[in-house]
Amino acid sequence: MTAVIYARYSSDSQREASIEGQLRDCKDYAEKNGITVVGTYIDRAYSAKTDDRPDFQRMIKDSAKKIFDVVLVWKLDRFARNRFDAVNYKYQLEKNGVHLVSVMEPISQGPEGIMVESMLIGMAEYYS
Image 1 (cartoon, rainbow, N blue to C red):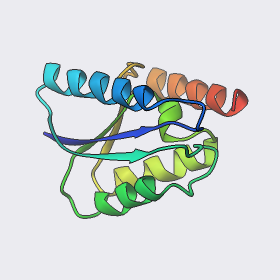
Image 2 (image 1 turned 120 degrees about the horizontal axis):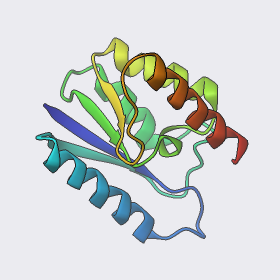
Image 3 (image 1 turned 90 degrees about the vertical axis):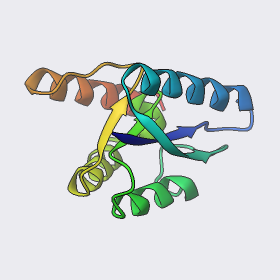
């Protein structure tokens, strides 16, 4: 299985260390789960309240090329901070055969996972 990592921080007040920590945790997760990381997409000083993020958009487009099976994010709020974008872009990934995984928030498959994921995205939107 192959994966890419998407990492992001939202403002200049956050530091590059934030990206490094996200990458480290995602790489550790990949190694422990037998996943080969084939690339990274990083948006520095971009809010996830909007989808106007260059590497995010490039990742979504690249998902159609079938070069990776999984997108690893540190937490779901790195992927999106509003419910519409979260559902829309997760759907696009799934349509392309790509699974979204939050490495710090284990979310099961099935009804319970749907509820947990919905709450996490709702909380990300609420606190943004």
